[in-house]
Amino acid sequence: MDLEQRKHWNENHQQLTSLIFMVDKHVQAVDLFLTQHALLYSSQMNGSGVTTLEDHLLNQMTEQAFRTYPVKVPGTKNSIAWHLWHITRIEDMTMNVLLNGEDQVFETGNWKERLQVNYIHSGNGMTEEEVADLSSNMDLSALLAYRIEVGRQTREVVASTLPGQFNQKVDPIRIRKLKDDGAVKLGKNGCLTIGAARS
Image (cartoon, rainbow, N blue to C red; front, top):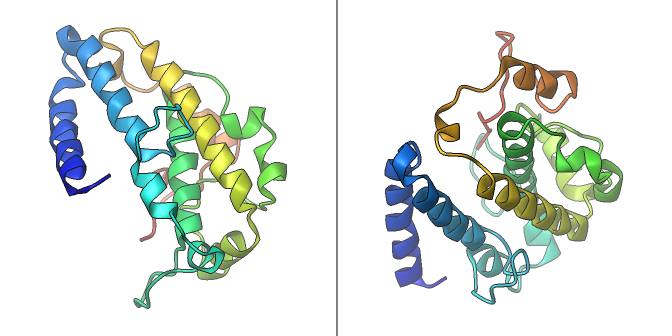
């Protein structure tokens, strides 16, 4: 994506946030979501042939750059690999469990073994040592394949939603399922830390 495309993406994102809860604009919101979503993934995810943000990110990236934090900043050591892992795990959980009431792609596709990771949660609250372990040992090809599978599943879930569904509260049973599955860690106050990522 060039600068003009990114500007257009930002404008569309603002429009989407204003449409997504309008029942009478549901079809328009879903179409716009799917357009925006595709641009965040590899172009292989939906075969559009349009160069995406992920395509730009990974173009000519070395494995070392992928696995290590690219700059020296106190208090943060999360690699690009960790960030892609984290956002994909969050999407998998929210779309498949919280929105759709089904199992995660991570579980149904045997991704723990395929990714060669020791973690099943989203990565929230990981120590620097755990981040380094995940970043160093994860199978990067499997990570990109997992992202594609999650992205495709998300598109199916969102395309099948009904008007008003985005306004519904999440069923507490679905939240409990994430906890029971070990998909999220509990914070010090006992609350789930699904999206409060370390930066």
